[in-house]
Image 1 (cartoon, rainbow, N blue to C red):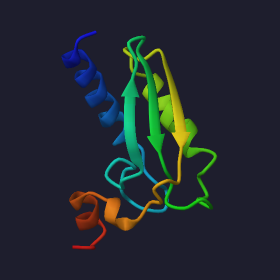
Image 2 (image 1 turned 90 degrees about the vertical axis):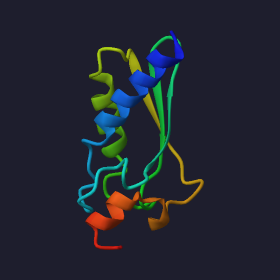
Image 3 (image 1 turned 30 degrees about the vertical axis):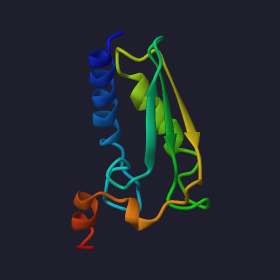
Image 4 (image 1 turned 135 degrees about the vertical axis):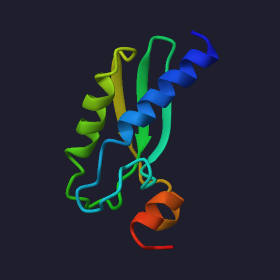
Length: 106
């Protein structure tokens, strides 16, 4: 797989991630800064490294499953694994300018 093909798959994954919203905040999880990294292997398996707004987040059980399920819908992806980390801890500084604008923080 070429670098260009990997970039295209990565872009498709990001587009999918931007359709998933934190139910308490009207901003998608990508712009919210919850996605730390996206990896795609040569075998077309995806691994998403993400966090939650807090360890006690009410969607801690369901949000990672939603991410896995939606990324797996891409025809280029064979499997998806989500790893949750709290290092570094999420802060509002991780939000994109677009998210901050949407939430009236700018």
